[in-house]
Length: 324
Image (cartoon, rainbow, N blue to C red; front, side):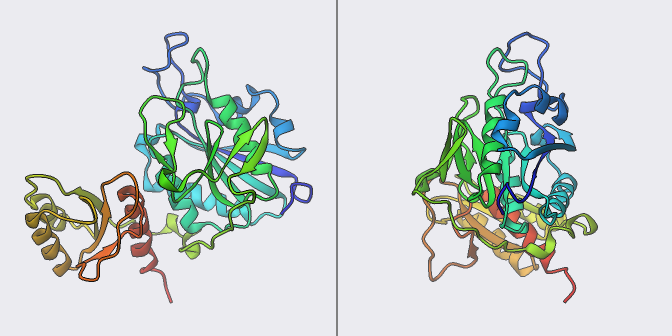
């Protein structure tokens, strides 16, 4: 839908470093996240109306947290609000201000449940709002410009001038401003001087959500327990046994290499699967993706990182509880 037809871009605030402050003037670290409201963030950035291409800007505070403390309840509330706004014909797009630590997980969750006919752009900052040279204002400008781009669709991430897709994006550095990367697939595009340049000369095709029926249902359902375990030297499987005893419904294992597992851990996972626990195998390697093996005992993560594989498994288990 063109911005000329839909006259509103809604910015949903969830907290994060972009809304953080420090008692030490100009400090880049040692700050407290989620201190400034989203309306105040917007008011502090000149040029947002121009970046919006004439669309009205509206702000809503959905949550106010450090994203390391992201919860299923906040995810459910954010997904429901996004779904309601996307169904509003007057809304051209959504921007979500978010912390960097779990941004990739939230992006994948939203990608999996929201319709892809309009853009939902997540943005963030590596420096607090009180830093000597904060990166949040430029990221917010770029995110609004991306949300106003008529060809943009689906869940995207705008950070450090780069446009990432929800599937590929991951945080790869704890400090630098360009902390996000899309691995060997590369970014989808860039925002340059307020204009979007797509990597291959055209916007990526929109993808239907895998679990679109869940967007408005997440708040009404208890979330299953899905945990991540790591295959490593000396793994004995005791953690898996403990998770099964604790009621875990799903386990994602971050495997070595192309899905290889420590023998003791593999035996424990077999016991978990026999007890009815859903097992998914991802690779702990940060680049590339596992090749499917014909003799694999459990389903692989289809190239997703362990944290995103956990999100997908959560949604699969939730979808199984839906009527019909």
